[in-house]
Picture 1 (cartoon, rainbow, N blue to C red):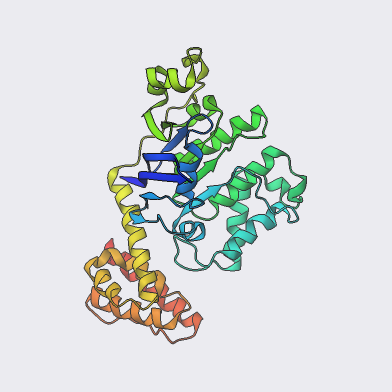
Picture 2 (picture 1 turned 180 degrees about the vertical axis):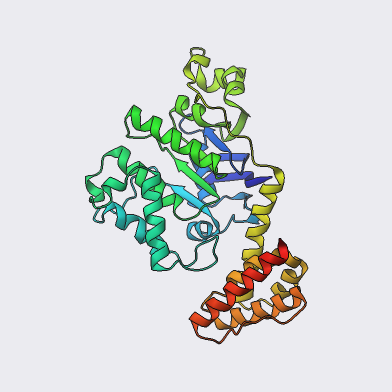
Length: 359
């Protein structure tokens, strides 16, 4: 099951059709590349995926939702991360402040369904700085970082937003060979964590080294696609892009084999979880049909409803409490109007009961 699907993308600039029916998809825990020469429509296809460019025709689906007309910030809230080609760090802030600024600006942490507390923001900042090997730079001004260090910080900022998918635009531009290798390792690590990745770059060897599959775009259309080994042997790819001198020797695949793809059941659960969280958002917005849809999902909706009890919106808490009681078949000990400390205690007890029942 794909986390990202592009279907029939078309884009005109004036009378010139630069993208003509492009299709591609990315699965959970998969790295997919978009390849192609300058002017082929590769970059435009990528930017339609990010939300920077609106297609004239076609659709973009993310986690089962049509996001074709959604702006970038709405896609980001759904779990679509983006690393721009140009440096995007806040130059006047320290490395640590760059991460904290992103976390503080997030109205809702996707997997929790609420804003992070200060303690949680600090803990996640520590975790991501350690993960990307830049803890020792935490107090350094971002403007003084090397190109590779800035790239690490940018990827860290994308990851801290709790994405399901990360879009990498020219990630190997302006960095040295050692840093390229480091970033390739990071990308493989993200893939192994189950994050989908779509990457585009002119450095074809580096792309084919890390991707599980790639699409070659020429003249606004996908002319071929496949695994790296299939691409480098494909007559169309050789004649249209790679040339005869490109061989398997150019591929320096990692010594470790690719991670096993996540089971279909796990992918399905991720998508279904996102759908339930969107129902909670609709419930908060006052959509009466959300109540019925949450009830139809049965006990699968319980975790998201428990998270909704933690929200600041008292009406959302009240509605979530009522739905939970109907799903569980009995009254629950929760007062949506109680002080926060009391509510947290009640929620903890509810979670414990639900876990015991599930176990």
